[in-house]
Image 1 (cartoon, helix red, strand yellow):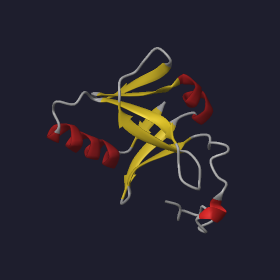
Image 2: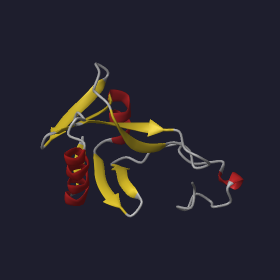
Image 3: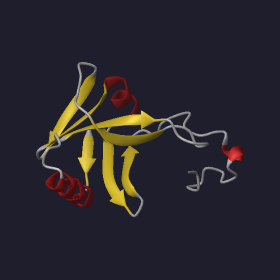
Image 4: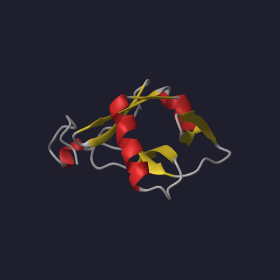
Length: 110
């Protein structure tokens, strides 16, 4: 379900070390986006019966089964802008409406 880079693991380890009260359960989900449409993101959350889960090290990642089937394996990394999630199968219908911001969705959307 997920591959995590060493740099992403280091960032997550640092976060949980500074927040020991937080449960190490991370949801991957599709959040509404601006003019470029929905995007994959993460939040602290616990799994439910409609999810698939995977435990890496001591962190549990969960995702809606339907989303997991659409995306395939996820690659989690970190960049200067924060965490990045790259699906094995790109999501359809995540673009459009870019004329409203003028960036053409070439990485300039906000």
